[in-house]
Image (cartoon, rainbow, N blue to C red):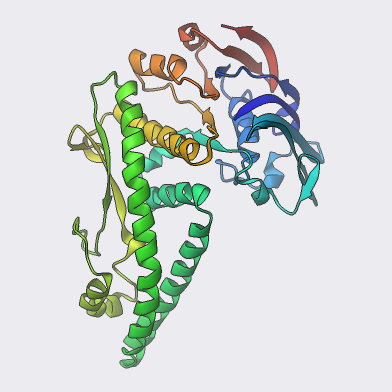
Length: 367
């Protein structure tokens, strides 16, 4: 998948911009607050997902303007395509190859991106919820039906938790838990199975990428971790029904379900060390980046189309060899990298570089 042209109008501080990127690495550089991240954000929107900045659509409209009009020309699935996003203060219009769509979510699967930004360091430093969210979102991209399974599980979980609270207050009704447990287990087994299968594959692809980033010095492994309320781990296969029965007293007392896929986590290991606790800043950033690029590789293997890699402020806290890998060894990928230091561009042995100032491209160079 390759972007051939991007046209932006009234998008944040970018009033009018046309970008014709190279097929390989594209470096977007300039001082802070000039529009580098805005450019990556505009590309990400065409994937159909929400902005990685967690902002409202109306916040993206340039100050003093009434609408956004962004156009993307790209080659994907063997043909040239065009997508257009128009966002007004009271209306939205999404088109794919001139065909109107009901919502931006209908773009999902037609144009794929994988994003890395500083916020994704929460994959390493954040709590288990951040890693579960990453894992579930990645699976949903290649298995849309997984979304409905997650939705149903969370609905059942909410109903079970309410039943637990009712039992605690009334002192009766424990037999109702048998009904909710049966429904919960059906969905939980699917979720855990899909997560484990995906994580096994991601551990392989991300591990290979991390070996390249670290010049063969670091082995990255990702392990699915099933945890109960007290933080104890169970690495072996288990019967969720037994776990739920054994934890009923604690569940009723706390009014919440203390065991299940909503409590699980990912252990991120480099050279047998859990990097959340003991890894350096560079190792943590490299691991998060490897996980995101590994996700991209899986999408490529499943669809035959390699997603566009959007790497925002990825170079900071990486040593020279890791920076060189990102700049010059992501073969066959179309990559967009933002950075502040113009010296970073000097490391580029092939590709294009664009300098941005006040939302405008002021220089462009082919390497």
